Image 1 (cartoon, rainbow, N blue to C red):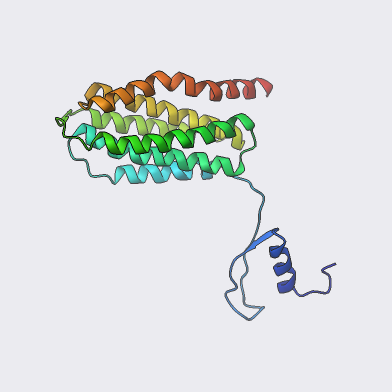
Image 2: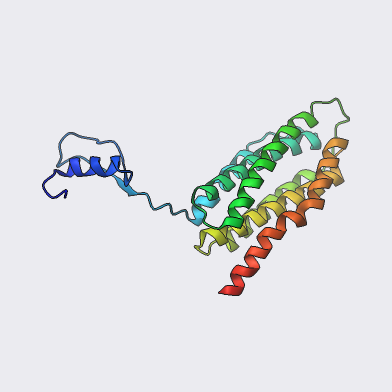
Length: 218
């Protein structure tokens, strides 16, 4: 059907049909021009899942610590939550498992709500927490999370990799909440963190059940 059409016309027709994404033409000379054609396969790999995690870590490491543990915890968590939101949205675009898609959808809603709450918690005049060890514990947890994500979440199966990466993300969230409980002074933050620790097992049920089933079927 497209046999007698020029290459440029063929590509345009395919693009309008939603089959191709075409980068802008760099030159009008057909012999010299470079056109990058990408097929929309919907495939997302491990590196795509790690992209929001790596970006999150870069932003966290760029935060200038104030020395007030509660305030610094909030600053770190704001970036941590956004990283989780971005991770879930990437899976939502290409994931295929109904249970994991529901997990991602619910997680986005919960993380966005937590972001809003955190912004109100430290606006009150409270005694500053000058805990010396808490900051290091937070960073150790984050570094451990990233190492495990890179070590365990590279099966090449998007669904399985999301379950592993999100499970480790939830673990880190709970572990950092424990540090805030030990080192923080803000009562509202501590109540929030207590709830996160209590709810950790509930959040993990769907992911662990999915992983157990997935590994059992292999």
